[in-house]
Amino acid sequence: MSERGLQLALEAGQSLPVHLSWRVNDGYLRATGWTDQAEVFTLGIWGPGEIVMPELLTHQPVELRALAPARVLEWNPDPAEHLCCSATHMQQMGMLLRLTRIRPAEARLFNLLIWLGERFGSATDQGRSVPLEAMNLTHRQLAEMASVSRVTVTKSLGHFRQQGWLQRVDELEVLTKTGITLFQGMR
Image (cartoon, rainbow, N blue to C red; front, side):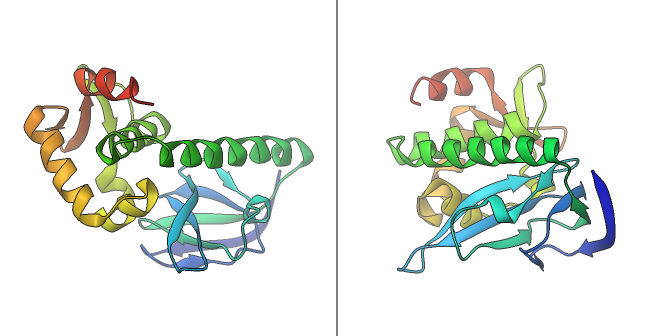
């Protein structure tokens, strides 16, 4: 667990070298890969306090970008951190793969929101917050993560709001307890 010294302040969309490990101080990072047909898919997402080790992402090529403005520090993980990061990276990739198998597409998107809320949000009286604005997630990025079209994301988010499963509370998007209960059953 030692710092190497390289500190970067990134704007949303800026990429990081993937031959180095990073500790996220502020903001969010997303690792992506792409298929032979140039379809983008997500390998993992990391937030404040987390360590990302692109070398552990078995898919090559891989790209690591800031989702939102971020501050990162080059990190040389000790053996215990390396083991912990490996397990965390595998869990994320497993969950992202599992999400792609959920049908219908609307349930897949809602379960992605639940997962993001569990990883980066917090519990509220109404349900669970999902920091979509803080993460600077676009409909296109949500579509790539959920393996659906951007149009499906836009329509589904509108439907979730109309049904009361996703609500705006104090500048936060909140998945309501009703919506969570309904869609977790579709995992």
